[in-house]
Image 1 (cartoon, rainbow, N blue to C red):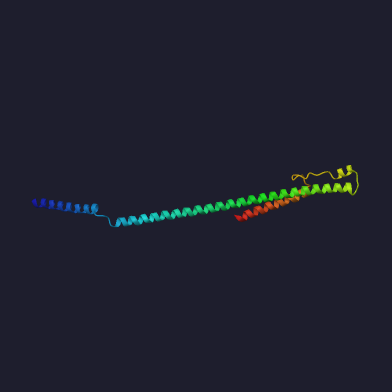
Image 2: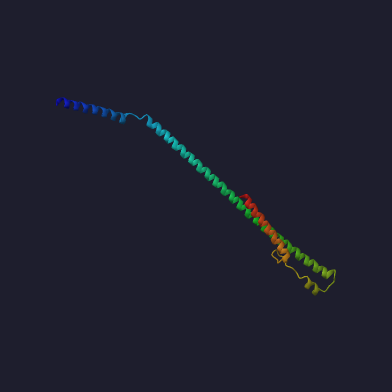
Length: 163
């Protein structure tokens, strides 16, 4: 029984020595492989974050360019429509003035060259409104309105081509 106790004591001492050495190795020895893996992992994570940030920036720039192009196309379309409306207004104003001038010239010819009575010339050639918003004869108004519609169509076609 003494020898068994001795063996048990030696086994316990040996176990204590092995455990103590293992604890020392684990607790006090600086890790050799772990920091390299952590550093590589950290660098890979940092690189992935940088790549993701560059991709987000590239996406934002692409979206900004698309928005700027769309805004420019819309502005060009609106400018085209404004130009078409201005051209229509100028055409109507020119026609109103032309018709008023022609009516005045015809009345003057009626009175001067033909030497007809004033009442007849005034009734035949009533004074026309030369204002830009005068009422035009239907055939002239139709031509001007058709020109406006063609211009609007060209604006729309140009806008769709820019997209």
